[in-house]
Length: 330
Image (cartoon, rainbow, N blue to C red; front, side, top):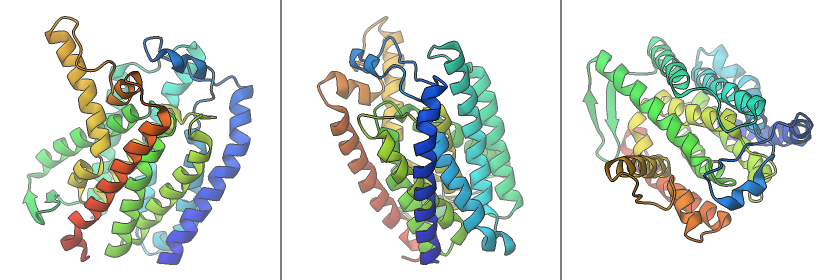
């Protein structure tokens, strides 16, 4: 199994790099450039026109290895990696439609919020039902650290699952605001999933995790500051889908709380800013939300933000790995 994971990582890495070498110039020729928020940090305006939709390159690498590397798992009737992939692709498609609208209109406005919400809820319901139908998902909530399981009525579980999925996917999306940030923060998350699946013997889930890790490691070559390409909503929503779907495929969605701490902090900072602004009629808690922009406005460079956030995500990934040790037999 370990060799399969290594090949999935290396194959995804290589395919992502090769795809990126061809994709970035193609995106430039197509003038598929990012439109920068007018109310964002002024120095971000220099990034105007940087190619977006770069997430297509790691999507290609991950998809290829899930299909090529997962043939044996499919033959044995284990489709979990394909279910995770399809769910991630559904969210990636939502992001692609959003990016396409932004590029076409040449402004930082894509699909409307209601349109995205309806599509995301539909995709979330499909994931939960598929995993349940295949026998990979119970209506029990495993609580990390305490090694206890809480049983929920199935309708309640589905409603909670949809809330977790939609919230988590958008939290990952919010984190994509500084060069390499979403990539760096998600890398340890993917590695943690791979390690848990390997120890637990979930070969197909481990395959997806390894491919995800390899694809992100390769994408970071193009996305690290100064970024030559942005992942766009195509990439960030795909990653959000991948992060959520893998947690549910392991039947441990609550591990998203410690494992996705950075995503949660980013989202909370945005919520706090909006609520406080409305309650105080114009006052702000942060110089700008989400919190990575506040740190930028406070003098932090993009590389420093990337390093600190990635380090915190790595520490939480290690903690999460040991938080589920009793369940997976570590």
